[in-house]
Length: 517
Image (cartoon, rainbow, N blue to C red):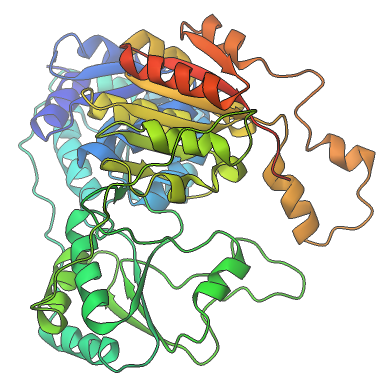
């Protein structure tokens, strides 16, 4: 077999069964090799930001990595914003980055670039394959690196001549190292903190925002009286009936400061101490209250779920968790508002839904309106780089074809990766997208006021306005093969959402919601 065939065979044998791709000339032997290894599913996207975002969404739901196929350095650069989000989500991912043939690189062809610099930007595992016979081994090591706790990006550069060269050998899977276990002494130290009677917050992050971690955290809170929060933007948060309903830290610094008022101890579990998302004149960046001591039960890379179980066994051995009971809002009536569209979502959200949430300012009510709905997963904007919502929905739908995926998408950020709709149609994915069209970068209107920028007038405001011309998401979606409708009232949204959920394949609903700001 050639190098490309050995690479794909090794990936499949290592549990990597999907490759999201936007290939170019340097990757043609990889593309051809897909027919030789039919167990690998190739999914085409029209832009590399969709490729990388889809691989992120896939891994968040599948608990194993997908591969991407990217065309040289510029192709990787196109996907970098969603690689940033994936890095912050601790997503396991294998990027196969095609490159010029080794003997061709010295000629400085037009697409020659510094791929190593881009790889370094991902803070992941990096290697360039220089020997066809070693490609399989490189691939196996890449998968193991990606699966090393808490999960990371692995970048494997594949020069064209290494890909097409004969002598490829498929390698056996390499087991990733097990996450280190927190020792009993540290657990005992944290048990003393949460049992001290002083105001304490436990902050949940990587590895503990799903059922196991939430149940342990709820038991600890019920037994000791500590407050528990989930980090602001978790990679995957399980919610709904039968699970503890644990609030997330707020987005705004003022919200976090209020949530942490008078807290004396902050206990971190797979999370970092909170900081302001941006700097604001005259305001602090570190949001840990003055005088509050920060303790780490389990750091990133350690077995956070086991650590939380150990702590619950010590301080809450006979305590049951507090579970969310069924509770849905009534269907609203009247013109759509930033509040009532979320009531429609809460009233109709189906069992087992996967929500890819990039609603931004239009989504402030979602946590309240969906708390008592049937059990579901929430995927959030982990790195703050907008344009994630639709691609993550693609990946989640590929990973979980029997579950309904709901993309809640603000209008401005939808346009960053709008071609994801085409992939939804091509793959007939079970994704319903609700675009919240307020014809504005509403979050930037808010930030314009919060940073204290003075003198903003018509020119400044025009840069935050998405009208003139108005975006028509119905026509955009239909042009990419996705059936689409428009809702201006709560009744229309409820009817269209119900119909979309009942029909197979992708749908888009353009919800005309006034700007909150």
